[in-house]
Image (cartoon, rainbow, N blue to C red; front, side):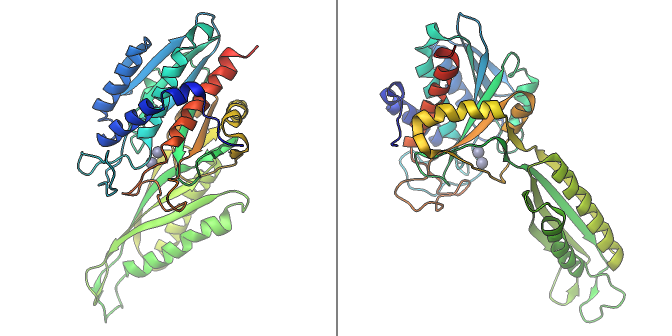
Length: 392
Ligand SMILES: [Zn+2]
Ligand SMILES: [Zn+2]
């Protein structure tokens, strides 16, 4: 089936794209999304919503209330960009040096504002309320946690969030129930040995040799401690150490990330890392410091919210919906989904003129197929129609 963009969304397509390009051109980092949140707040106020700013530091929440009671559905977008210098040659290229929307959050904000514009027209028919949630600091910083602390979920019954996804084509929607994105933890291992002359190893403790054993042994956690039917990742992404070719290194620092979909696997990885580090330290006589930092928890979709989302998304993209998409990436939508039933899903946005997978998220030439914005807005609108207008 061809994609069916809703007519109300198609009618404001130019506005949605213009908003996305405007935000793209003026990207902001972390909690410093002042311009973006002001733009969002103005848009929501113009629609006549009850708007609260400064929530979760620089977040914005807008309420569209029906007058028939009923549940409140939360729709969430993130607003922050990344510390990347944009290299793509586009007319709306970032003018903020070293900052770029390389993950699509500009699009998330534009899609949700587009949906807000359309849904305002349905206010009289709403058998419930809609809360539009715009948060800062998804790319590290855990903006969602601050939004929740400031009460953004109070009175909200369920929540939905989109990620534009360049690993899927236009017209595809990835959604599944249960685990959807992974816990994204971070670790640092500092190996302290005893340095010396490269030709006189006796009496030294070679931190490079210890690190080599450690990197190899850590890979056994995924291959030998994890149930093969569950996914985990242990990646050592950085090794720093040594002084010169003929010097035995006295210190090596390894940094990396661990990913898992369940709390049990997360704890198992942490425990096994400790055991392996202690064992190898003892074997070679090195002191090893281990720091493990919990990142975002896994994003777990609620079964009912998933069913509702899928039901509505299918009306927009037909059988392009329901590709059971999983990512070992992390996402702070997880904090919302820990509190109330939630569903996080992916809207295919790979640029049509380029090979799929050649414009990955977080790359300096990141861009999207802007038609995907209309798909995202349409799904939000369809979901509200199905849950708060045509239901019962
Ligand atoms: Zn990202
Ligand atoms: Zn993102």
